[in-house]
Image 1 (cartoon, rainbow, N blue to C red):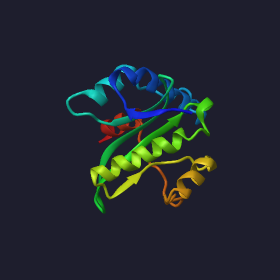
Image 2 (cartoon, rainbow, N blue to C red; image 1 turned 60 degrees about the vertical axis):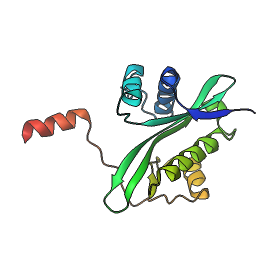
Image 3 (cartoon, one colour; image 1 turned 30 degrees about the vertical axis):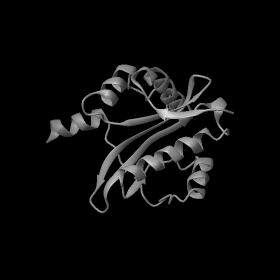
Image 4 (tube, rainbow, N blue to C red; image 1 turned 60 degrees about the horizontal axis):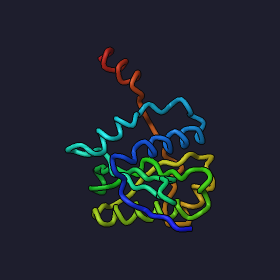
Length: 159
């Protein structure tokens, strides 16, 4: 199978948004996605892009994506966070996920980061095996902590 891994363009964001929704469905959160195509264009392609995105293309159709952004660790310094790596269901098992993953690792290396980090659901054993096989340390003793928009508003109102 022939494919292209490349940097995403503004006009790819409709396809990227569709992949984001597909991932949300897979992760049993179909109504959780609020980001719009316009948000992705504004936030990823403005004067200070909030993220960098790679896409996988087969026969001129986007069938995968990886979205990353820079972070800073007080322990390590510059890091990259892999927010999502998504391959459409019909293209899983073709090597596209590995190709996107490789592109993310190369990107982090070129940026000179000390760490690349991401989250994985504890029930997604195929992904966990893939990451471990490729040298990642799945830190099962850490929990992800988040405050949603309503929790942020509540906190502000109470403090």
